[in-house]
Length: 430
Picture 1: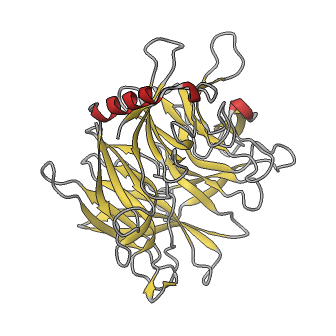
Picture 2 (picture 1 turned 180 degrees about the vertical axis):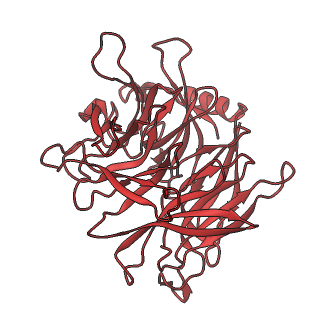
């Protein structure tokens, strides 16, 4: 069902008559809107299960993603008598004709050895169709993690390990990777020991075969700045090569999170410089982002806070670069979620071509499942963004990061939904 939600304060809500509510629901039910469709149900076993992370799309409309489990390998334990599997990378191909069936192909099944296991953060795709991701290692072989590349070669897909971390020399890479125009990969390291960091993985120089990993920034200790700790989501690049991202603050502790900019050095080998664009204060300002930030039109940044806002159900915010005479970025809350009407705890965002924002919430209005929502910009500057719930999941799970195809359909994954409760992929078509 497509429901456009009205902003009503808790003190006003009891005054709404039953008749008005019936009218609103009747209008919403009869209004035309987008259609929701499950395009694939995962089955476990040799197929994947626990579809996590984001989807990416190629120019032909094929979708690619990861499952954290499944694939058939016995190296990652058993569920009863069945192997739990070490995870997969899969492709979903659209039907040749409208209304047909999508086709799933498992491109790679992790074996839980030096190739890694249990990918859970989604993929990054380059212009040649190569896929990049992160998989955890098998602790029986090493306490390590794997950054991998999957390439289409002569009708088959070949996995290669670009870099293997080895704790405690290296720290655990997390989230999705970000790719620049020179082929460098960027990502976060976990805050499990310190506050986390940012690394760069550079392709081999001419004649070489090894990728080079460099930690380009280490977040300060919690005692120095608890908000600038625990990076989350993935990084985003601007045209000048600056990196932008978000931190949660100390998870389970006293930090509230921040949005930052990391500027590359003018001379290779020198330190990158970090500036804080906004440090959340909690309360109405929101706190603890649960995803990274995204650009729109190469200027303003947009993101979400998991908690806070006027209803303590999370927010969507905008960060605008300094105008003439200003010294800092300007933060504006463009939407406050309300657990009674819109779901709560938003996770991530994506823009369509018309400037509408789409995202997911961790919890629905019932407290379970989650919501897929649309935020339409105001018709006049300074007006209110309008929130519309496009889809409510029927399982106690939230959808992962969303992606548009070239036809402007929206796709996402449910980690535990579907007919076999092993996860599903869905489409929302305008």
